[in-house]
Length: 292
Image (tube, rainbow, N blue to C red; front, side, top):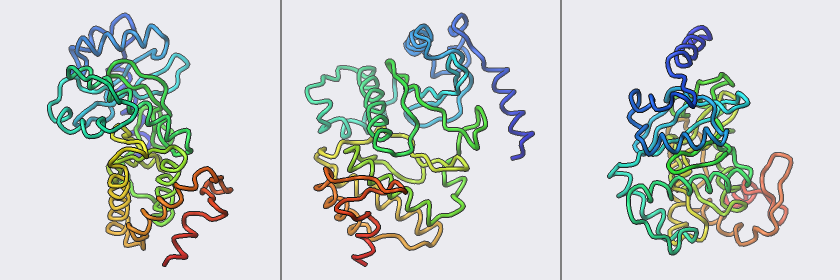
């Protein structure tokens, strides 16, 4: 796609889908994600001066739609709006809430309450990963079923979202693989969090860096199924990079056990100049290489 085409797409989106506070009630007529419950949540965020303008959707999944918007200072932001009634979402999400110590004692009495907790959970998960030095969309705030976060653009172009790595593969797959493994370790050891749904479907390529998205399913390291989820993440990443690029990857079980062992000494973790964690003076890749 040339720069001229990108500019045209941006202009069309901005001209056809611009809404300010006075006319957000029109949103329900142009996009089904904006029911009255969501519009009320959006109005609150606009009144709080979190959001200034709302444009069109840039991504859509089974549980949410991502909307391009602008903050009052003109910065691009993303609104992840969770659908308020999705049976598949409800059936598939309880296992990630149950067993999470942050939600012990929480009573989920209806679908909207579940969605609100899920939105709050992803906001918290993003914060844990971001503070651990993982490249994720920076969380800004949330309200009801709307999560506000950094807009991850393609090559810095306003309104153009970064594509998934399955659609825009990294130029250096071997380096990209190590970057993702580094992020998995930083999330687990410093953030005490596991993505639990990691694959090529939630890693995007900005053209300059890789960013891990969709942290709603993430669980804390003390979740009863933490080891199972961590192994699944590792296996998914290994499968993608080995199958698509034919590069050599670490043994999944060895990588898992090394991470678990390093986690026990997390209080000694410090970063080197390349943002790898040093534990007892060793990087993860040093330990893995020694085991090969």
